[in-house]
Image (cartoon, rainbow, N blue to C red):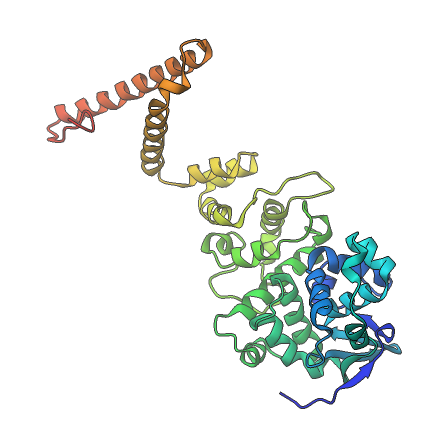
Length: 376
């Protein structure tokens, strides 16, 4: 890594970077008050743990902040959480607003002195530090979330003219993570350009970007969007004729706050796998569009024989469990439970009669198979 000289700057002359990928994720800009950014960092990025570390050991001088001067301000492009922690300690009123317990921000005089001036490496441009920051936060120990990573990769490619291949080589990426993250962000940006999606309108606390970029690794989802098998660094990876499919997919994944539409993906596992299977079946896709729960649509996407067999096994396990609790679970007074058991018995008899009828029909045609009960 390039050798940089360390200087020391007072915290009140250092400013948080609203362009930082993890901060930009929440829609901040140059008009956002710094206290709002600090509050956001507190709520989402574990600033308290850094406060407690400083309280126990002081500010680590061997881990300097990276700074560039922009519009006459020293902008911290690496170390925003640490700067937010320091500013919280130095402003007890702000700290109390953020945490509620003023005592958390009381540190010894010895460690207080380590906050008078912070170690800083001043760079000429943001570009000077991208390799270090990229390795640390994309592929290194202090990893960002997937959305922040994608934003940073896109920024490096767009602003510095660095290819995805070079970015991957510089950070030691051997799993095509760089390409997949970049492609996922291009899908989001293309959808916004086509006005079929708005990342600020998601139904939830934030944009769960990993749902999309992970999903783009599934065959059914890629085929649904007409993207083919190979990840692309194209800024418009989804063909124009698949505009409506893109709109539908993002609605399923993220919902809409303004339209009060809930996303169908509640968890990445197993719902992403379910969605992939659904998109391979026109019947299942129709069911999902009609408002069927993802589990119902997923069942429609599967071979009927497998669904039937699994349903029988699930029913058998449930009945065996109920049977094991019948002594304590039913005292003979709850008529409603008895009616439910009767309905189950009728359904079981009807299903058995249908299956037995088919079985005997096969036997009459010369089939040698015979199976009436599990123990027969």
